[in-house]
Amino acid sequence: MSRRDIRIVVNDRELRVKPGITLAAALLNEGIQDFRTSVTGTPRAPLCGMGVCFECRVTVDDIAQQRACLIAVRDGMRVRTGSVDE
Amino acid sequence: MTRAERADVVVIGAGPAGIAAAVSAADLGASVLLLDHGLEPGGQIWRHRAGARVPRTASRWLARLRRSGARVLRGVSVLDVRRADDGSPFEIVAEHDGTSAIVHARRIVLATGARELFIPFPGWTLPGVTGVGGAQALLKAGTSFSGRRVVIAGSGPLLLPVAASLASVGARLAIVAEQAPRESVVSFVSGLWRSPSLLAQAAQYRARFAATRYSTGTWVTEAHGTEHLTAVTLTDGRCTWREEADVLCTGYGLVPSVELARLLGCDVRDGAVVVDDTQQTSIAGVYAAGEVTGIGGAPLALVEGEIAGTAATARHVAVGSLMHRRDALRESARRMRATFAPRAELRACVTPDTIVCRCEDVTLAAVSRAPNARAAKLYTRAGMGPCQGRTCAPALSFLCGWAPDTVRSPVEPALVSVLATDSTSSDSGATS
Image (cartoon, rainbow over all chains, first blue to last red; front, side):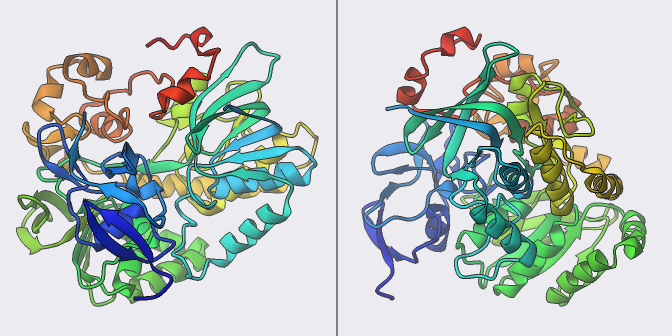
């Protein structure tokens, strides 16, 4: 664990992740497979990796529908995964 | 608080074409603003992992961009582009850092690139199924694939560098399946004698995953698993077999991202923006360059970007040699697209229960009751979700022959606070 690691909180669990990676990468590296839940209740994870498909949507710092593949990890970030579309 | 910006030339998209356009226009003295989605310029093809070596062409152009007078705005979502009338500047409405930005431009260069063509099959929505370019993007963004069992099943030259990258980071590559028939691929590779550097590059990529089978005329028919991917069924038209997999990278080439072009009213043919010799679209003052005018790779995008950026300054600068190079590269691109066109059998993989619109979970059966994309959207919500048809419309175009429905602003999801500050939106014709 390097001193440069970034601390983020995912579903109330604290994680140490490398700086300079996207939130999608951080979540995938943690083994998270359900970024969001689809309208018929199925788990979804990143598909396109570039912000076009919207499958990687998670809640960041209480703001929902954020595309994790377009967000760089930031110290203190609070993330919720698995939400259903409202 | 709305941020107001103004520039002679606004370039939308900071991939190779956008960067070349911005540099060319700025070097001729125009004020240039380059707007991009991403955290760093480079688009998709020039993404790099933190600390990784950047390819020489990319680093040269990125350095030129830094030295040029062009200003780069990162993390921008363009929501609307319009013009009050023929003489006035264009107005680009964008969201940047949670607030709105209105950019006035004398001329625009659309360099909005491309995205992957996904063709649905049973199980394709399982976590663990990514695009081919998607896997590359996720890898470069810091995702670890070490020790993961990976199947790559799709089409096009992109399979090679992605297979090479994944093998290099310790992925266990089970197979690389190219749907194009063996004869087509062999013929294409033999044609590469004209470009020895491309041939050498292909050989280098292949060497990096030498231990893995590269199987032509082979495609995925089903992905298996409950909460996530566990196995993939492949076929070569005669035999069918199963491979265990944690990750399936699938994608059948690229489709141009023409949403902004269509919003502006530019002519689009066969899914690509139509441009004249100077890269100008059918709308005066709007230029387009790179994949958005037709899939053709980075060298072509750079040349088109230079021509477009130069033309957008309205200074009479000779670009004859650029045009020459462009025409040669376009011819190669045509051959490439013909070689790797998705085969008809891929239409047979999808079943009535297969989801075709991932945002709204609409199955093929539901969508098939409609005669076209607009009707499908009204009956089933297909295409109404956040991606606004970016994923399903090209798939439905391949499966059913449908043209996509019209584009309306906001072209991307936007905060209400951002839309509310755009006080002239009621004049644009877009309704709630």
